[in-house]
Amino acid sequence: MNRTSHPSDQRCLLLIDDEPDMLSGLARILSLTGHRVATSSRPEQIRQLLDEHAPDVVLTDLRMPGLDGLGVLRATVEHAPDIPVIVLTAYGSVDSAVQLLKEGAFDYLTKPVGRDRLIEAVERALVQHEVQRDFNADPEAQREKLGCAGLVGHSEALRHTVALLRKVARTDANVVITGESGTGKEVVARCLHSVSHRTSKPFIPVDCASLPETLLESELFGHERGAFTGAIAQRPGVFELADGGTLLLDEIGEMSLSLQAKLLRVAQEQCFRRVGGREEIGVNVRILSATNRDLARACEEGIFRQDLYYRLSVITVPLPPLRDRQGDIRILAHHFLESFMRTADKRIEGFTPEAVACLESHRWPGNVRELQNVIERATVLSDGLLITPDDLPDEIAHRSGVSPPSMGLDSVSSFHAAKRDVVQRFERDYLVEQLRRAHGNVSRAARDAGMNRRTLYRLIEKFDIDVEAIRLGEAG
Image (cartoon, rainbow, N blue to C red; front, side, top):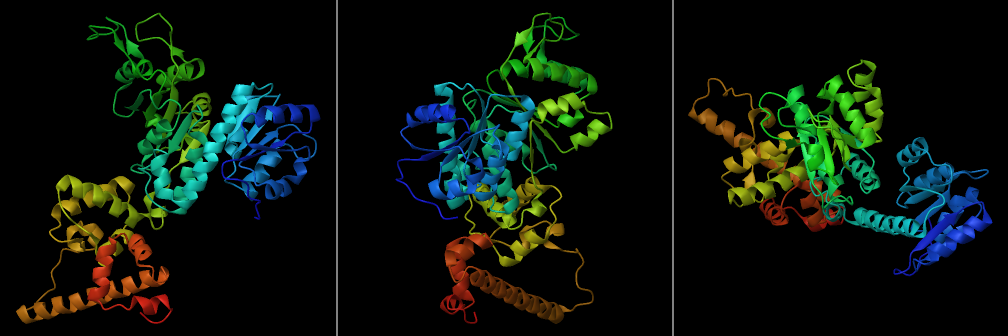
């Protein structure tokens, strides 16, 4: 897409509305931001307008003849997905807001919109655009800036997840985070809280599967003195403690139907009563839920309330299993290694190519949590500068636990010598392939292989690899 440039300190706001008076009025308000404002009453020309004006934010009316605001949104998402779109309408409803957010809208404003509200939304969208631009240039640095440093990796699956988080983080929409055990659902929840306007308020996680129903009800809503045996004093619940902040209901699919009914009222009315109490207590809490269950199917089976499901899952954020995150295993392994080295006070430079191959061939049923535990174990057991397959569990290192039968000392010696030759050939071939993929760029090859650059230089010297020949496209 050819995009016209404009001064770096002045952004462009593209405003689309079929009513001339509304268009000029909104343009006057937006001009107060100090940024360039481009206007159009021809939504069907959206692709041409995007190329011509190179906007940083698009603002569009929803109901227009011809191509409506949803069409403008879809065309922008397809043609220039990094540009935030704010939709304005005089016909607001919850259903249309949910639809627009799911389609990728940054925000949804109901007319008449106040000047301060409009400018505030635009400024947030401008920050959003800058964040996405920086993310594309340096994903790791941007995840840290967004409070998503725990979401480590470069895979397409993870990028889709982070892009979705970017869209919903600064809203108050309730979110359901889905994924297998160990995929990092609480990490995502903390990320959503840390970049929201609630970040200075409490973030409280509750494991709904670890408590029986009566105790979970008291944990959520608190209780009055004498409400049940052992209730010797009044106690606030997590909804009170999280007021103004975020509550994570982990394993929400394990909650009983009777307790789901009480949770629905809080989600709808933002008020509740303590167990044994009569006083209505109002709160302002964003509810994030996490589950490894298919809640839609649970609704069909009658074990989860459909009305609660729709109330909690305004947005659903699915987390991919580690086996579907191509290329992220070595990056995560190196990330965990650096963390555990500091704890164990050890100096380990990385992983041997054979160890990386073992890690990448494992299916990881326990996902990121399992990988984290394996790297912690390897860090403790390793005695060298590199993690080897000997430092990994048997099932990951593909060790059968059976020694070669009927071998004398000479045969054993020959066996191990042959094994060393095979391993070294594998290591050299692996390094040459990584360098070829990186076109001879050692830093990139080291990053892709999940090892320290100094380690790669040492191995290049050890195996006498001609990096310049690889860079020129010749044999390694």
